[in-house]
Amino acid sequence: MPSLRRINAIMFKELRQLARDRITFAMIVMIPLIQLVLFGYAINTDVRQVPSAVVDLAGTAQSRQLIYDLEASQVVQFSHRFDSVVQAEQAMTSGVVAAVLVLPADFQRRLALRQQGVLLQPVAQWITDGSDPLLSGAVSVLSQLPLTLQGIDSSNNPAAVMQVVRYFNPEQRTAVNIVPGLIAVILTMTMVLFTSAAVVREREQGNMEFLITTPMQPLELMLGKIVPYIAVGCIQTGIILGLGHLLFAVPLPLHWLSLLVVTLLFILASLTLGLIISTRATTQLQAMQVTVFILLPSILLSGFMFPYAAMPLAAQWLAEVLPATHFVRMIRAVVLRDAQWWTLSYDVVYLAGFTLVGLVIATLRFKKRLD
Image 1 (tube, rainbow, N blue to C red):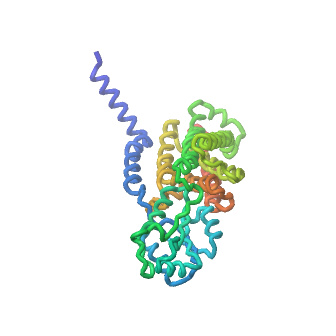
Image 2: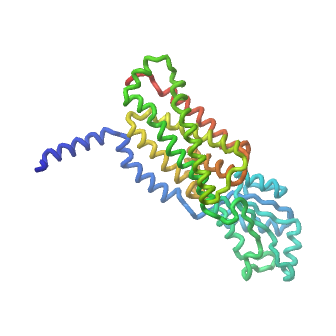
Image 3: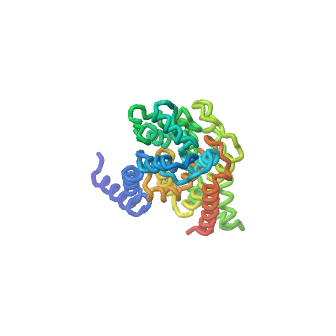
């Protein structure tokens, strides 16, 4: 017969051990707290303040009034102004803006003709980044809003006032947007998880005694731990892109060198992050638990599932710290918008700096001793 006394003793022992394990105890409290805060506060599908550009070739009072009216809707924020459509398209390719409002030079004439009921073509044009269907859809709503321009009421035919042209993903297929972002999630999960247990595994398997007696420097150990996994990350990237192309017709990147550069930068940043965790954790279980804290915000805040522009400012600051946020922007730009890696200078510099700083921290934290 089971002994209630012995069961209570085991239960008491497990509770005492759980109380001593700070990381496990923190997960019990922090995981529901993080999910509650992220889903209740940071995650928002009601898109506002989409970074946009305007190309006002007319330069009239009516064109400026239309710009003010559209910005007053708070759906878009005209953060850039360009003199030509080509410049605006380049900004969209590099990810600076997600939408462009083009007001033609004959904007005034088109308004006059519409007032006379002669012209039926649109008087303005929206160019949106179709690689993000949520942002593109939010901007497209503006083309359907009733507008009154110089006495012209568009409520009867609102769609005719502004034309919407979607670049990079005109069909607005979700798979085109999801598959490149999925690379960031899978690489974060595998690269951080593999290396987060790297140093801990040496201790648990008794190999640390051998490392102590060798002339190997901490930096050499750190580099030796991450280099083998670079090939693993590249293979995973190839598998995802290849299957995405075969199964979901996701376009293959035009610039393979840019794909290689941004992928290597993210793999190195993720491996370095895993090494930092490995020098802090005492067991492989703790290393995996800490990895969960990194993986969860990386999925929810990086822009993989929910639009970055819809997040509150505090959530955007937190997202900018995560390497996955920068890689999601870069991989979508390279794969879907055919961007070159040097046009993504902000994200490239951040990941390179993150890797260097993280490698220094991991090296300084690693001590060649058993305690």
